[in-house]
Image 1: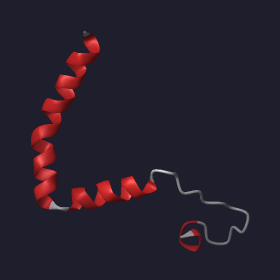
Image 2: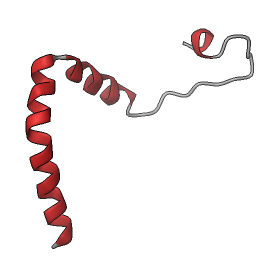
Image 3: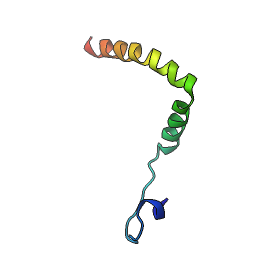
Length: 56
């Protein structure tokens, strides 16, 4: 990955975060049309409920 992201820069370092596997899995899930449709339908309701819980 370093050769692709930082060509010609030997001193540049790339660090992978501890949650990288979860991020990749989430991106893969969103690539599925059915999962993306489900999240578009349910996410606004969940965020609204979480907002109500933080106000209380």
